[in-house]
Length: 286
Image (cartoon, rainbow, N blue to C red; front, top):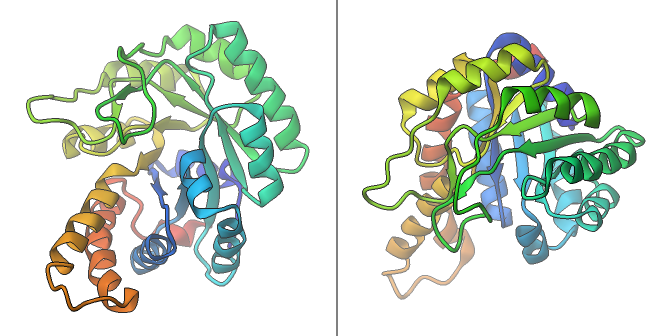
């Protein structure tokens, strides 16, 4: 069941759970993530970053939509971190049901302006829009782009931003970073800040950089009102760590032999995230 993110997260917002947004960059990852979500009966957001979309080609969106419409699971196909209007426009034309425009690096007024422009284009065809306010850190060169310094989202700015743009969901900066945290780096979420933002903003809130944070903090953030959490590095690390192990057998060459164990390793991580986000069984609410 293909949905936009506005309708998908409205249910999560009402029932205090978070929908995982898993970034995929090939067909085996897609199959594994859908299988894991079906097994846990959890709603699902398939997220694709512009860099990933250049790698897969836009044709993958039609394949995702076809798979989504063959299952009863509520599934959204979401452009992650669209960097400009042209990237968002391509996503809209390619069949995404939700888009993110990331103007967090821009001055406040310019961030509002680009978000308003995207909202006007996307809402005209019933596609939902995610904006971002504040900056997310970055931990390594392979992670999605982030800022060297985290700028925390100010609650009063969040109110103005939501009202001025008309966005459907808001990604906030409360202390996360993209990528896998290096040894010795201790992520810490400002949960009091989240609580204050949630008390002032009614639309669903999003947490980027959800990989590698302490489970206790992530669980608490869901209880306090986070409704979507992005997971990319954790599932990819599991997938390719297993692939390196499998390929120690130099005789293997067929993808249908090499990739299933990798999918299983990735699914184990996905199960944990789905449970942590209190999303198990929540597909029955749609």
